[in-house]
Image (cartoon, rainbow, N blue to C red; front, side):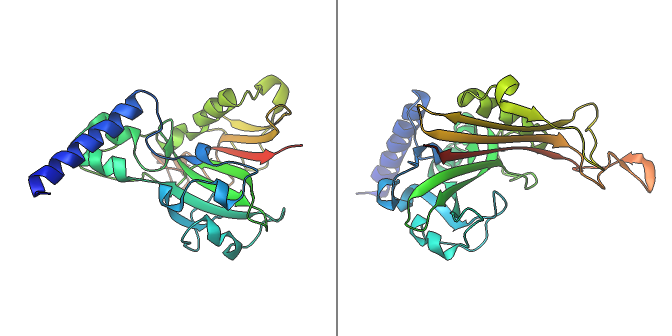
Length: 249
């Protein structure tokens, strides 16, 4: 096949991928394609994701892995489950950047959900059965600077993702959630203080959902520089949403 023919083939193939995405079909695998209760053989193929690593309870990745099959290399958490974090395939994003397609760049940018950058993890038991999923808004500062910047949500908006997740899984703030007051040293960000913890069991789906949402300043954080009160600080706050999904009887 000539270089021109190959280029035309890739162009048409990319167009097909984006057309599928536009009609609502999943163009790449996400955390929602994993199957809780199924063994490794029942999960998407290793090449559907990238950047496998031992997890840090939703924090930045630790030891790199080749695939989910290396889960036993990760130290178990208190409940005995091994956390493997991973990233979504970025092939479509690079195709979109090559074609300067701004909408598709944002649609396929990094590991994101509804435009929110996230850290996603799979939780395996000692037998290699997937027992849980973990999804946490990515707290690492402003992710990438490209010629065409993806239109992703900023860190200060991360707590708003909690409402998206609650709506998706039927978590009722009035019935399933508890709002806590500030602990010692915690304070609002401007007029906003959110410290919400939710738990819901869906008997029909055999799933238990744990959702935590935060928008606050931690002890020692301030909106103004204590050494120069006229100067505002930058980034001194927590804005986050965390969802964990486990099997339920």
